[in-house]
Image (cartoon, rainbow, N blue to C red; front, side):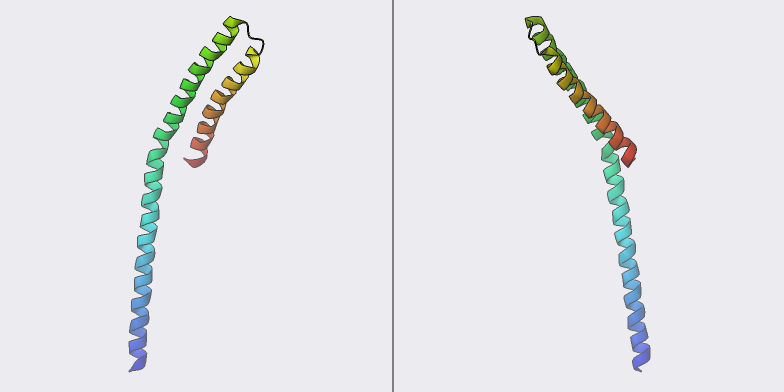
Length: 98
């Protein structure tokens, strides 16, 4: 009498664990799909931020160059480096995660 009852309980336990594992897997897949759907607009946003940073940097460098400031090249290099970093970081993230 105890063996059939134990076998039935064990079968129910294994079935519930398998069902829970399936639900967890579908939840992970759904989360992955949601994150990847937000990734492409995020990369485009980073590109747009890089463009704005480039425009602001260009105006700042032009202002320093027009006023005859001696460290114009340092300013140009730092703003240009920031733009390049944003674009390269977005491209690497895109190629790495998608």
